[in-house]
View (tube, helix red, strand yellow):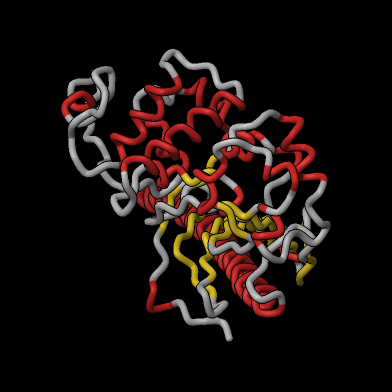
Amino acid sequence: MHLKKQTKRKQKQGGLALITVMLVISLCVVLASEMMSLQSYQIKRVSNLFERQQAYWYAMGSEHFVKGLLSGIAETDKGVINLSQSWAMEGMSFPVDNGLIEGEIIDLNSCFNLNSLYDKSVDKDQLKFRKDVFVRYLENLDISSELSLDDLANNLYDWLDPDDYATEAAGYDGDMYASLAFPYLSGNSPLAHENELRVIYGFDVVVMAQLQRRFCVIPQSSSFEFNINTMKKDESELLRAILNIDEAKIESILEQRPEEGFTDINDFWALSEMKNIKGVTAANNYFTVKSKFFKLITNAYYNDMKFALTSVIQLDDKYNTYVIGRRFGGKVEREANPEDEQPTN
């Protein structure tokens, strides 16, 4: 009887031990599976970081290449920039190892620089001329807005100037922004990117959708200089606004522009159409055949990873190039570190 009890007790203990072993094994399998899953996740994460970093370096390589390209073209053609040069090629695409680099270069001296509406170094008459050009440009683009086009111009001017006082009775500046339902402060400084227009009163979603890419911003520059060689025929609204003439005359002027552009700005002024334009002397100082600022838009791909980079490049009088602004991922504007920028020889 006693032997039977011991046997039953041992059987129970053996069954309990077997269950314990099975539980331990199950726990080990679960832990091992979780560790494998985490390891797989970490490997994928590291792989993604590597691919993104490689795409980033492809984009930076594109930037470095374009700096050298612009410097070489400017040096060869003595600073004259035109649309027949290789930088202006559309749909640029370069295959690289396991990837692709797409790029587009825009001459910022062929578009209206929003920061030019305020410049403390010029007199009131010149500032008025710039404002008038801005308003005429909006008219030529057929921009519709709840505010008048003059009010849009005034609000942009007030955002750029250093004080908090509106220039017109209906203008917006200083405390007027602070009294909005979602208050904020007026910039009172140059724009860093075109998207900053959205916070200026009057430039709502509807207006911004109409503007699209018709304006540009040159960081920390109030440049109001236009390269007649790089102004495109199918985007003549700006040239019409500057010269204040009709579309037919603009088409005639651009038709007479040589394929490789004017080598001297005096050749532009010598055109018969230009001689017959009244009051054109106001724009005499604002046209050139040279360009100092360019925007590079790069999309770099490595395997399935994409890296977007927008760079603003400045070309100086000695044909050296510098990056004065960068935007990663198409969202945030980042200033370049001047210590990292070396002249391209």
